[in-house]
Picture 1 (cartoon, helix red, strand yellow):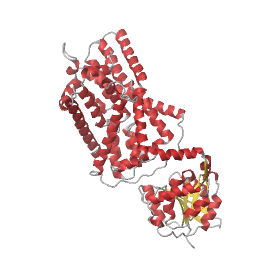
Picture 2 (tube, one colour):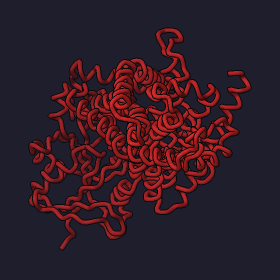
Picture 3 (cartoon, one colour):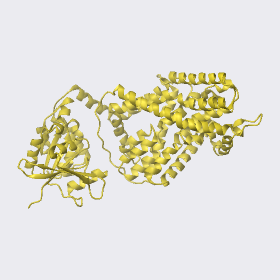
Picture 4 (cartoon, one colour):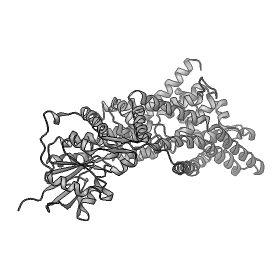
Length: 613
């Protein structure tokens, strides 16, 4: 009795393979894992028009036969008959997404060039037609040299034609040199084939294609990206100022009310110097957080964020990384914790470790209150030409410094501790679409709630604990309360270490609780200055005014430089330990980031002093 023939479904991720596999095999399926790996194996049985039963396998999605992930490695080995315990398929069905034809044809050419009996399923043609794109499969047949069958798997359209073509598929002998086509040549050929197969397209589809040509241009695209980011940081200050001022006035008014109606006591001091001064000084930056995330969520929903990843791929390749690292690093602008967890999608272990180690250099939203309060206190609110605000320009510069620092750190790491070649990068580009206001509103509410919850839990708790440490033991008459307190003794000890880089006792005190959450640095400063000042009018002053009276400009600039490089909160360190299975790399992260923070804060301070700022 002859062996039952095997057919394998192959294609890029999101080509609709699983839907086609389910439609062809129905309930006649088995699911297991490939031997020795955690990659899922799905196989089923279908019957050809000739009555011959065949075993069909749904292979994991892949972008190339030169694997860069466990999924792609399984697919490559199974197709080539190199996977131990898995029979080589007798025929292949290459599944293409008709609405994203050019990208999927790159991989299709590589598979067809193997010479196995192959049929192409031009899937999801209904979605392509809905988007205004009509294709001619016969033109693709002529170019690819194999049968091309239009299908709509979810509606079972084209299944009979596909089964008939599969029964008639024969071994194909590729022409001279065809198997040697490189990635660049395949991309050029895929573009020509896709263009030639288009019978008609709507204005909307042509507009999307033109947008891609502009936004993904190797020189114009990055300029547009950085210009967009520049606008974002200008808006963070320009648009948020009225709302932040209103919140600050509300906190000041509430402080005044408490001072007026509550008799002098430690309880009143806790309310004014601790809770209102500490937590209130952070909450006033909620408008900046909302505006920043409004832009980020809009770019994600519109489909632009994935294109930004492609633009960054070339720059990141220069430091030994790929565009796969861009999404985790981009997530780190919100918070390094989900950014580090997102590195699980990076197959190369050296790429993944490098991305984890540099993720804290991305300027997370927790740093924004720190930057905002220092910039508002020391950078004049004026324009520098063409309506560009100086404060927004400085904020943009801090984000750029963090990005450049991360890239340089990656370059050093990839040439030393995580040495290795950069891996390739391909991802699906989503369609352009207008963001839905409801989805944006839900996303912004979630971000605002996370920020306020941190203010009401972590920041509140740390602020109250710090207030207690600042108020006990009580100072003798004429003695500064902060110097007499437990916290003051700790800060005076640390101040010896950080004084050479321009930091005073109050800054030293803020660095310790900031390891719980970066925003706590702001509340710590506010609480410290409130406790050390007995004047009720001064207690109601804004933190920015207190900083102006207490710090020099070189000290303020050094403080900003410190927070560009300083390690993230302890939660980030804990996640790093979990993702790297030990304390070796978290300890290294702490050491090198604290070292960078100290060195660059010092360079900033000494340079500013030398320039007479």
